[in-house]
Length: 64
View 1 (cartoon, rainbow, N blue to C red):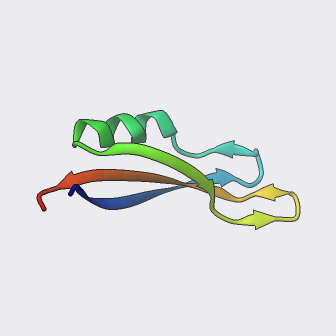
View 2: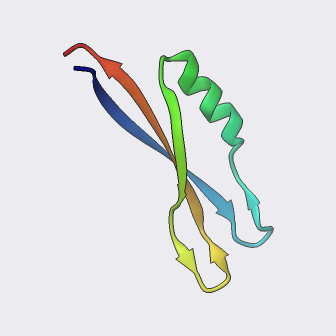
View 3: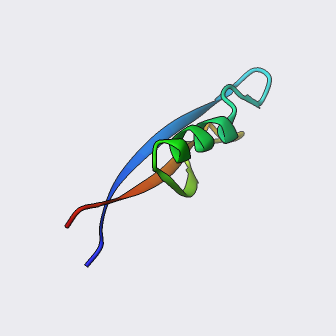
């Protein structure tokens, strides 16, 4: 049976400009270079005017 560990990376938005502060593709590629597989993203925090940030989820297979 395969076993996995999981890790998250938080990406925040610039509230004033409405832009992402970090390049998410750079984070995904860096994780991939370290053996992490990008799984999904979910909104981090909901505000009246939209989402405040994102959580990127990664997984890595480990020895059973």
